[in-house]
Length: 296
Length: 109
Image (cartoon, rainbow over all chains, first blue to last red; front, side):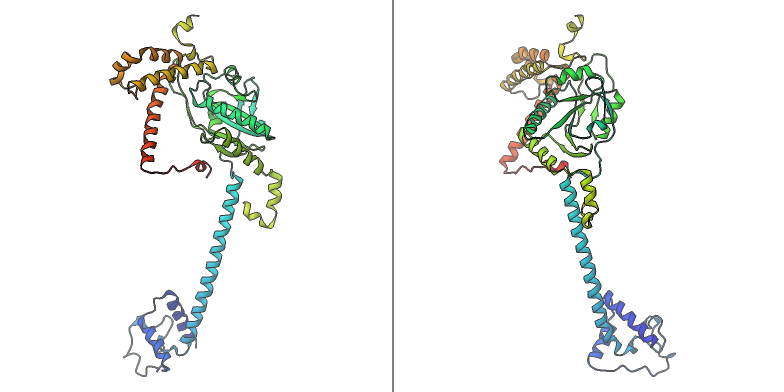
């Protein structure tokens, strides 16, 4: 009886793996034809089958052939097992896939995940006062990196930002516009102040020593290059990334707005983000609900 | 001031370019570039055009170089070439019925 059970097990695995040798098929067909298996009567030592034909754990006299009616039983059992396990796995993976989709969607709609952009910095504003990441708290900020001797793009972008600020103010949204220079060698607080005086009065202009500016740029993933060898009084350009960084009242990065946004679409985009913003405590409350996994 | 006799006010590192000086530079630049359009020169930095520029646009070039910061001069000349190539490429693509794909969302994801 024990041997038979073992043989059945082997057959299940053969059925599942679909590597059943032809012999199994012939065995099945024989059973279908209602034939009963005959035990080999001859001396097993002389009429031995090759070792491979003896089921693992079986005996010389009880080969697979001898398993009898149990084969029929194990076949449907194997099929049932296959369907059950297969179905369960399919259900599980389909469900998991959907869950991840929703999670991603929620993440995308929120617009930010881990704060890869932004972080602590310590600079001084155009009046020489210290300005750190803590000054971003409590209000939406929009940060632009540039330099005062910038030929055409920065002034255009700053003019565009000025229009956004006024436009959004009319819609009841106040932004704190921040200009951070990438050219600390030339842009002292006085230079920045004079430069920004020709733009929106709300502008906060930040500068600092070379390392402070470099570290701030790094936090915001801004590429900038001040030419390495400078003669005094030499005029040069600074390559830098041109994005507006929208930051929420917790000082977290929301979105980067590139040059493709014009006077109108940029303001719309910012408004959209400001309205979709969920404060931290609300997010935390939401995280305790049963559907919290959607927001992880 | 002796300082200004050597360098242009636009090159003064202690003063940011003002809105009006920028405007003046851009206007001089546009005048110079219009002159280059007239003599079919795209790349003003190319030495082979030097004679043609000197013959037809020297006054405009002098004004451009006087009104703009030294670093801007090269930048604008290079940008003219890039803009020209870009426009030409877009026109070519349009003729081939290519569609522009908006990748503005790509920044976020």
